[in-house]
Image (cartoon, rainbow, N blue to C red; front, side, top):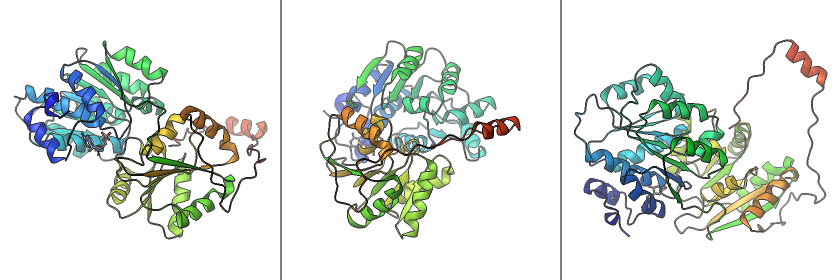
Amino acid sequence: MSFKDLYIIKPLLRAVADSGYNEPTLIQQRCIPPIIEKKDVIASAQTGTGKTAGFALPILQLLFDKQDAPKRGKKARALIVSPTRELAVQINENFKTYAKYTNLRSAVLFGGTSIEPQIDILKKGVDILIATPGRLLDLHKQDYVNLDYIEIFVLDEADLMLDMGFIDDVKKIERLCPETKQVLLFSATIPFKVEQLASSILKDPQRIDVTPNKSIASDISQILYYVPKRNKIELCLHLLRNTIKGNILIFRRTKFGVDKLEKTLLKNSYKVDSIHGDKSQTDRQTALNKFKNGYVNILIATDVAARGIDIKELDAVVNFDLPNVPETYVHRIGRTGRAGNIGTAYSLCSADEKTYIKNIQSSISVQIPIEENHPYPLDPKAKPIVHKKQGSKYKKGRKGAGAKKKKKRWY
Ligand code: AMP
């Protein structure tokens, strides 16, 4: 099948050809026709499947068809809400690439950076808005964003959006758009809470599923290392010295863990950078660019910061900390072995993560080969370390003193 067979219009076909795409990916084949027919769509698709073009191309096509408004004072007619800044930036880059032979303009709005340049862009008028929820609501409250003309509303990475606590913001944004709008919901997984959200905002949606959640591509090899928690950094260094080569993405569960590992790797003269939720937008974007352009070959990230980020040609993914959700493991390791390349996923499992690996293996129906030949083996009888709770007296004291503990974001 070609993009022509999907009745894509010429200016978009030219842009797609410039991008070097020969044929539509599966998600594009399935998504583009119903979106062009103005149907609501709920699609379960992971990053890397080409889902951005799957919604960007038909959206541009729908907007192009009645593109007669003057450039200035244009009203936004499509809104894409994305959970993270990096993802929003990436989606905007995609829109710009595909829209280059049209007059359609897109803009990206995200928090953690100065609001003025975004206001200036909005004043000039745009057709497509890509935004993170908080900044969008902020700009709407200040009357710089008008959602009254939105015809297409896209929720990208919906499961992550809900995990990050954006449910109320998402509902608020949805209500600010006209009721008649077309709604497209994309999610790597469709857990119950995404279903619930979908049933409240989508009308008779077309369901598309191109990613069987539990399948692992055959070109990814997996290796498991049992290691005491205290030796994980040493084992990681040992593997980087002797085994793991090329472009490497290392996952840690927390931003503190990311920082700690980055410091150690820097001290050991590795070319490394990192992304997590506490870093400024500029720092995160710089880190990503450095990794993509080959200035560093190791990127350390939390799941949330790395979600949806398009990184090509990964040789290895390292699960420094194992995720407690099997789907997260599948997403993580799916980033390597893409486009016919062979990739390897290395997982370091400590005693307290044994349940995670058990659940992962039963979820993917694969026994991951164990590498026992390494300098930091885990005693098979090792029990998880149980952290003692702090005394109740201490807790009372702090509460009594009115010291309200601020909930910290961990991602
Ligand atoms: P996404 O899943 O949207 O993040 O896309 C992942 C990568 O696939 C991006 O680098 C896109 O540029 C690329 N891509 C999207 N559509 C196609 C296609 N039809 N053929 C080849 N590459 C594509």
